[in-house]
Length: 348
Image (tube, rainbow, N blue to C red):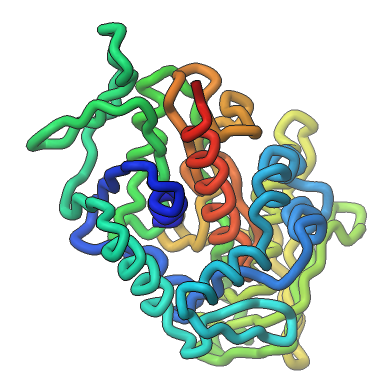
């Protein structure tokens, strides 16, 4: 949606393929339907937060140029220019003033309607193929009922979390079929399971002033995040737990070659401290973000264009990029989408 908005602003014809019956199904779920779409921080702070604790440095380096060109505050101003009233929380998180994700989706829908951008809904793409006939179109987008040839194709299909919203890993499969490597999926920003009786007893309770720490075998604190902790029937969730779990996933991924032991998760709330050794995350289909995706070493960070397939671009979670909870992942999607469209317009 953001890419189509950027294209329409520059009077570049485009066509949006949407797997579901309506746009923005995933956006409607964000922040429990409230849509925390950005955070009021500088680009440098944003990039630092992506790799806090010494993880995901490749992700931060890859998106640095896109974030500096389209920082969170620019995104906020863009939505305000569309008539979206916003509110900012004490920690800098930005929401629509009415705290309804539908407000963001409607802003996109109204803009694309007014600009007469064609949208093919209920239209899953089945393949993206190369064309070798020497004409200007280099790629073919294939659906069940018709195909479209194009000079540029942007894969903005998301990860593999919440598949009912349409995020089923299509884009990664298309990229793989075209020769790209795909980093295996892992759940990111998800709760962890525990049968600790204190958690079970408090299931359904939310504690605003909690914390989660990640500790290695020597007792060294690798990561700590203060924030909301929720007790669930399955275990623990909330922003503090989500961000600690994301750190653990990246830590384990980067530690596989060094044979380090899984760290311990220590979660504090009210007067309780719950220790989870070798913490087990909930399934990928429930995670807020997908860790993994198209390998960014095969994508040009200056353009978001494939290094292997001219005319093929990527945006957002289809790539192996992810951030903490708090508006980071939508900002990543928006900034990389803008980068791809602007680069695609200027491509020879």
